Length: 135
Image 1: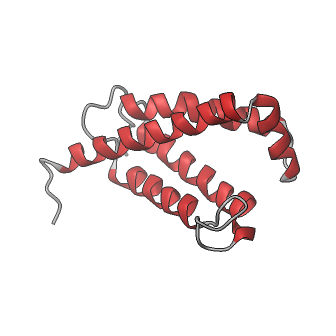
Image 2 (image 1 turned 90 degrees about the vertical axis):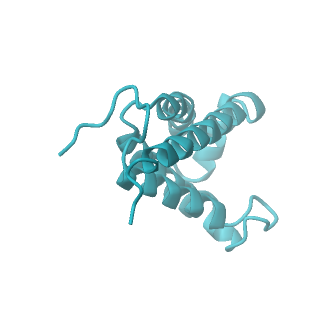
């Protein structure tokens, strides 16, 4: 049974945590790898380099939107897809364990994808600034 009184606050907690996570990922792409380096990495995966810029912007803007609760369900689903893409394109070749050398395996990004899909299924949570439309 779901505690309908407290569950929205659990989703809020997950929303804030994952929003911060994605902001940190975006800032790492911006300041550590640099935009040009991020674009080059995405190109090395066989994607157009500009996808790196789009992902970096999505992580920064989408992370803030998750924290404040702007269409959180839709954003969470998109972030889940992004994490599956990261697992498939950037980590699957390294095996399962994220502790594997050379970039880590797929366990961590798949875990975050599942967390994001869970948020998408659960709903916006408490204190959402712009809640998703109800069906």
